[in-house]
Length: 381
Ligand code: SOE
Image (tube, rainbow, N blue to C red; front, side):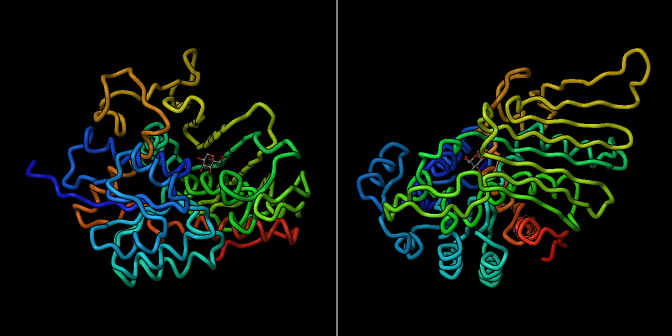
């Protein structure tokens, strides 16, 4: 391939997601032969010391302490937003207006209403955009999509997903500020619904199509926590746990559950789909395996197959090691960058685009509305 075109990245936010994205930009060109090559041009964070350290550690050429500088800089092509959810909209809209490509960490924003102007901004500016729903790009999950598209499951009856954690059980854990903004509704928008179920919903919409109606319940187990920014004990307004039932447009029934109070579970995302001809099951703690049961196997040999998704004819795997050697969580982000760059070169959108990610926001809003009203809610885009 001819000389690769540089794509200058300006990363805003340097927390956990800033690291996963930076790692992805650094590694992608080593493993994928693409027309574009990401260049770590600048990272931005409010603390000068932390921004400098992050830049040095990850190899960013420069750092800023005000995201507006990143948006204004002529040497930045793409703005990547890894800040808490309450700043996604402002940064994305400004970046699009400045003609930058925009990559935004999930969820797109705190609510559907807040997300709409972001979609308008990127579409009006005509800039490439994507939302980092990384689990779609775990090879076993991508393979689930292939199996469904090949018709191997037949008509789908059930879709089931869980995302279980246990890190907020202690009532002594404060809310707000760096690291703990996910517990602060003002910054996060919601609790497990926007943070964890958003992943499950994105994957479900992608694998099983649109959701029509939902009925949900939420709970906030710890009602008050000290707020790191005010120093005062304040009401907790996020949902600590959420469970919902839904009907998909294809006639299947959905059952979703997420909590940060499932003692013993750190990040257990599981999904299972039951179809007329076959079922599939996936588990983030065993992420390179896809469990598959097909009715064609009826007879003495029927049983669940545990497919080790590590071979060159399975999604993404030809770019990695040799058959049988697995990859991990960080690779889903590398795949997202690879797909973004490949689509960019081909002049195509990279899913989920901001517009596509609106549907996840609409489902999250309907879930939270249903929990509040104790009524079934339609998903309204
Ligand atoms: C929360 O703990 C969290 O880090 C989410 O914010 C991520 O999106 C999820 O992938 C893992 O858990």
